Amino acid sequence: MATSNPILIIGAGSIGERHIRNLWALGYENIIVYRQRNLPFRDIGAAKVTVVLTWDDVIKANPFAAIICTPTAQHLQQTVDCLQAGMHVLVEKPIAHELCVPEEFIQDHLKETTMLQVGYMLRYHPLLQQVKTIIEEKTYGNLLNIQTYWGEYLPDWHPWEDYTQSYAAKDNEGGGAALTLSHDIDVALWWGGKPIGNSFCTKTQPSKLNVNTNSCFNLLLQFKNNATAHVHTNFCQKVPQRLYKILLDDAVIDVDYFASAITIATVDGVTKKILENFDRNDLFISQLKDFFARIKAGDFYEFSKEQIINANNIIGYCYNY
Image 1 (cartoon, rainbow, N blue to C red):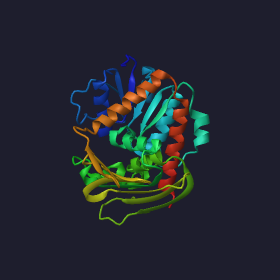
Image 2: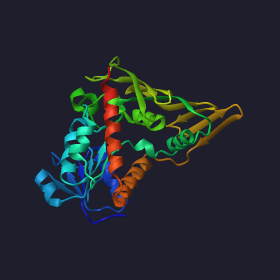
Image 3: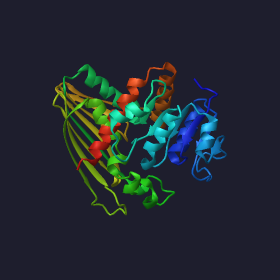
Image 4: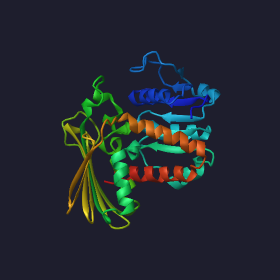
């Protein structure tokens, strides 16, 4: 349900503008945008938002929630600032470009009255949710192995700008294929459960891209039930692919993200389903709806703690090499 209380957007690049459009679509109109520079918006035209350039102006506006959409290296401090000001926070992934200590973060910054969510919106994908249900209900027996493969080409992400100037291309801003594409680490943890500590990670920079960070990333994980996972991401692949393979006792499941297709193969045959009329923006809409629903319900402290622990684990894997 929409509210008249202000919502804060920090950063107004492509993802910030997406959140603004989606907030409008959900009926939220009182939007404050905190920017370091008051530049024209790229894609939302004559924006019906209030732009502020100082943190004092943010505090005076007293927003009840914040969505953080800045480069990765700024996420953690801005998250802390918003939580300390009493705002609920949805921060784009990852929450930081360096490790934070989850116990200390929870003790120092989380309160019973404020919620924190990290923007791993793939958890709202209908096909990935179907896989999650199959694993939890043991429809085809136990989970044995997860493989994820995600390759795209960094210069194609924002054709209107020089990719070498983007945060994704810069190590000191939290870029690289490991952190920037860490969605799939979250998916593996979401499906597989709590790791038992065994992991191995490699990050390399063999591509011709003009970046000073990793362009390929591989992670091996072992879970509590001894199932395993292999996560591969890169942003140097000119022909995009995004694939998931899940091995169970009695089935093999393949998900093709770009084709919006799921295939389930058993000894009895193969079934395939295409997700018709899928729009990637639906993931962001569903994430926002869930964010506001949790705030309204008021039962989010344990959820926020899990978000911090999960995010810290992901960052740890990205730097364990």
